[in-house]
Length: 158
Ligand SMILES: [Zn+2]
Image (cartoon, rainbow, N blue to C red):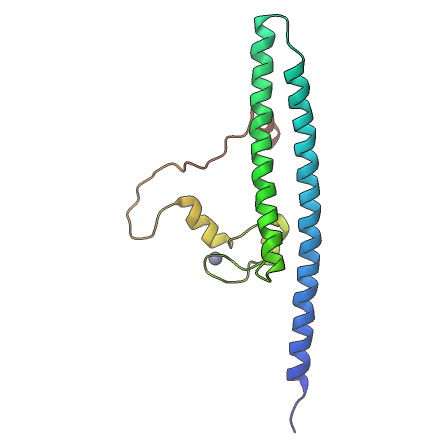
């Protein structure tokens, strides 16, 4: 009496994985469009700011501040775009959703929160901390910490 469920399970698991990839590619495409739209708006604002030359010194300082903030945001969104494109190319090669470091499957929950994640949470943590276990607790601040602009800080922290 041999069960035939073995083969069946394999097939349904395969289609489950396909469905997962399909969902995730949609998710990626959507966040790519969102980020792209934001960069476009910011770029346009930046251009407008640059064209309008303020009359007095105080305005110049203010407007420079604005431009700097926008540039920081654009940089961040462009970084996200790069990450999304990298994720899309991993998707094409069938390597999307697999941690680049430990080669384990990245949990769906994490991919939904960060669709372009290239690492599982554990590996990302290790990377963020930037130190290897056993090397001692040198508390070196990460060079890649992003400082949010003032108006974002307000909406995030309050
Ligand atoms: Zn990992």
